[in-house]
Length: 256
Image (cartoon, rainbow, N blue to C red; front, side, top):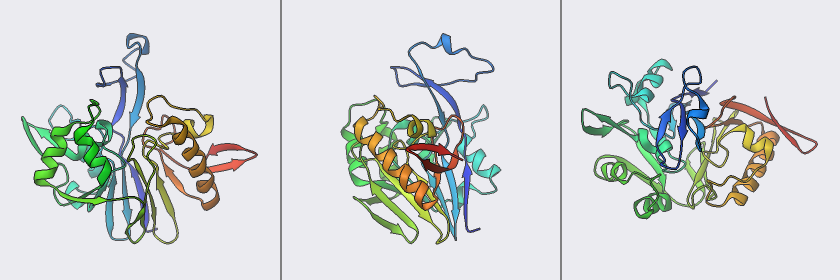
């Protein structure tokens, strides 16, 4: 098998109007103590494909009590080193997806993946600097601009052989998704347009999307393609199944 997927689970969090991500462990914490909060799971993905090591989004960039980046620890558990990552493919730049592009350590900031090229939609990058939402942390992007190898892509296309990208908008105006293939298997990363199986199965419009109706329609479209072409779907915010194949029967989606 030349396409391997590793789930890099960073944890579960509650988020309220302050947009702060507070760790939530159901064994310790009570949901009722965090009113008006969304509860989300965060899991970037590492993909080994042919001779490339790809990271799909970077999580929040939180560290453990020893100052080690949780994302780095998870990559090592998967059998790799952070320095081995060739490309960091970004669906969009909201903090829960982009925080791990850098590592905050002893009041310093450093690149989490110094040997990688960070791949971002140009429109998303430009709007991240001008958007007033607290979901964007411009100090991260300013640091990357000075220190990282950046590759800006536009619209739809093929980044490298086996790595296709598509500008979807919907969640943010310049959100993008990726379809990876080694020629036999296909893995689809829908970012926050297809963040969890439940959103596909239940068909609802999410208030946190830039264009909720378009996002819902795209989920339907990608779900049908995934079923038809046997994609392995990677769900960044999944509560239950982080990866899975989609079935579509009599108008109903399921994940297996």
